[in-house]
Length: 395
Image (cartoon, rainbow, N blue to C red; front, side, top):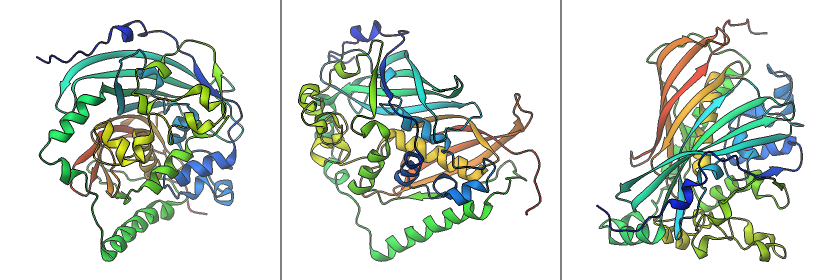
């Protein structure tokens, strides 16, 4: 039994409470969608090329389904980071998504409902007593339609304990070293990326048909990750634009979660210098691009974002099914982060075929796994993807 004090009493009073936060001031702009596709390394022209989008099912440029999380002020995680636990930090533990057949598009205004759903505490090797909290964010457009619902899991732990355990680990020094890739290895990685991109470019505006149980999706390759790529991801999230969000009425304790001093944000200083609450320069996210602060919270070196991992998978599924299909549901658990220097590999297999009750369309169930080049599982889960009903002749 752990003797470490891990007090969750302040968390209890937030369970089931409708939360405030921040909301986008402006409608979604076409360049918001383009920046998102670029930041998530998703070169599907449907989401950045208006000529391609005009010839699509939609007749115009729309956002990928992963874009919903871009319209939130905290990657959808704020409802799961309620209540103060002094000296704590958080990592993303997973996301469950439900989608309702609508796409976000330029001109839309998106608001959210938020609530802490539940939590549990268990012992982990990483940090001792650790809280796994789930919070719900519902994304609603200006027409009052629910676009998506996200149930995000945050992993909250005592940073000092995680740092101590990392330092004591026999392999800590080795784990802190980023891999070195030869020119030939980098060229091979780029070739694998291009091969993946061609799979959805070749599908184009056609419908995905003749799906079979046991079918393996083409592998998606991302990386090697770097501080530059992590920064590009961070800047794709609208929450990081100065002045882009306004305060919503309603209670929230996100800023009083018990963050370490090194990871906190100075709201008063930010009135003079907005970088003080930027998150990348100051705040809980600075460890993503700074080895020193990554190690302060128990990570070996700079690391990627849980919200990006989920988005990579949603984009992967969306690119495979094509514009005539949709991701209906995905339940994803994040096991390990994308570390700088590493490569990410995403695979999926069709495990079942059925029917989507609301539409009568075919429904494919897929098992998804994300690994790095060391074959370590970074994320895994199950998704349901709605398939098109009838193939149309190519024009």
